[in-house]
Amino acid sequence: MPYTMSFTEDTTPTTTATKLSVDHVNMTFTRDGKATPVLEDINLEVREGEFICLLGPSGCGKSTLLNTMAGFLQPTSGAIRIDGEPVTGPDARRIFVFQERGVFPWLTVEGNIGFGLSKLPREERARRIAHYIRMVGLEGFEQSYPNELSGGMKQRLEVARALAVNPDMLFLDEPFGALDSITRLVMRGELLRIWEAERKTIIFVTHDIDEAVQLADRVVVLNSRPASIQQIVEIDIPHPRSLSDPRYLELRDGIFQQIGLAHKV
Amino acid sequence: MKLLVRLRPIAFIAILLALWQIAIDLHPIHILPSPWQTLGGIAYLIHHKLLLKYIVASLFRVTWGFALAVVLAVPLGLTIGWYRRAEMAFNPIIQLLRPISPLAWIPIAILWFGVGDLAAIFLIFLGCFFPLLLTSINAVQNVPAVYIDAGRNFGLTPTQLVRRVLYPAVVPQLIVGLRITLGIAWLVVVAAEMIAVDSGLGFLIVDARNAGNRYDLVVAGMVIIGVIGLGLDLAMRSLEQVKSFRWGYAEE
Image (cartoon, rainbow over all chains, first blue to last red; front, side, top):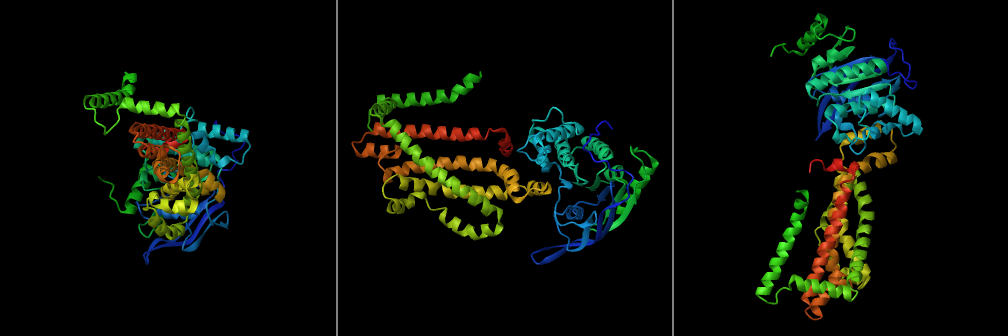
């Protein structure tokens, strides 16, 4: 990769240490005295550097699970540990990427990417901003504001802002959901390229089966309301993956069946 | 072409003035001074060194009343908006005080501060305080949770969160509130000056009528009030053009 610079940590991609463990996590929302179970006995171990997709229909509770992993929500029972330590709140070592809505509209592209870098000396900060602007292909837009950018550019900006603080995990909540299908395909390729270069542990929420099978090392298929893990599918195809590879189609159709959808329109 | 478009409103005003002048020339009745007489009124005020003095007096009161309201209402409103419980506690009293016109406070203002600048400033302050308070409360409550979450995610302390996320996120709405409120302040100062003081543009209007039915001066005062009000509004509007604020008005 042309983008290896001194400040990117040298993580070995073959490591098998457990990064994140979800242990008997239950979550119940109570509103107007009525308790609604949202997560039911979730158990999951994620290895360092692994790319995991949480797959389920809209509203099944997969975003709740992601928010719980990221520390924005506390589970009703059970434990979430990252690097062996219980998660008690959001942390700059693990960045949550919202659908493009998360970029700050009052800051320029540079300002957004540099948002988490205020503690760095100015030169180092400028160097990192420039590096990530190049990585996500926003050269020439350094001084633009988000409302001057397209949806795909905003999404790349948010990913760049997350990567700039050199986190060891990324949580992505349907990050490409609002994009058109062509941009979405391009963005998937970009994300994989970045992941292969930086080897962050990625937890990616999606309701798109193809997306999950294209991206993930393992796809966690969730049941609907309350969300529980139905199956974990290992995607044993090396990148770059061909979308007409028989193994790809086999795995994809397997998940379609698992979810109970005949693969016909 | 562009120049023509820009001149159009001015041309329209000129036509209206001409019609007004012609109508009064044709039927010389004394219900309204003509534009020419009004201009004479303005010249009279300049000649007697009253115009600048009265404008300065009015702007002085507006500045103080408005600034006091901004300094108190904005931080208070942002705090109340941030804490749901505070909003529940304060809301009834705000809703009760808000519909009372600042003019209803004139007797109390004079009782507390006597006839003079303080009473007028107090009335302007009251007129600005509640709209600004409500704007600030709303502005905070309308900040998308995702900005706050993102800020927390990057490890900001509560103080940094307020300075780097909450404040920039509310500024566009606050500016709209400030603009509207400054307009209210300019309305209130005229009314306050009619009763509580003996200088300023409001006083000019009431005094011109009482001291000899000088309606040319009355209308001259009204014209000056309009022009300055427009100027204040344009100045506030120019703030909305600042690039880092402009995202907040994209949908308007």
